[in-house]
Amino acid sequence: MASYKPLTLNREEINIPSAIHVERTCQLPRRLSAVHLEPGPGDGSARLGAIETLPEGTPVEVCGAGYNDRTVKIRCHGQYYFVFQVDLDSEPIN
Image 1: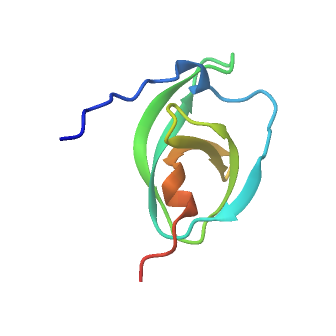
Image 2: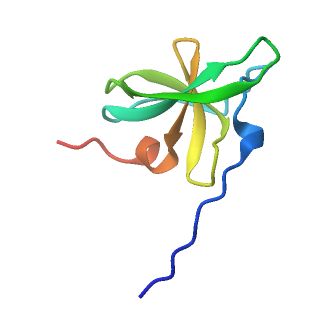
């Protein structure tokens, strides 16, 4: 039986970047769930917000590391989200 390894939360990545760094752009291969980053009081801080659904084909910018080693930060329509890396790289479900 495989042992359980808890994921560590990288709190340093839970922020709104002051400078936009786009690693790559892509379109969502299918409808995805994303954790919205809600901006704090103007100092770049943020908190994890609601889980939203982003539509298939939505253009997004990958902007850096996520809150753990399985997620990435994306920007979509001026808003920041965390999504699973594997979801961005997967083929559309037919």
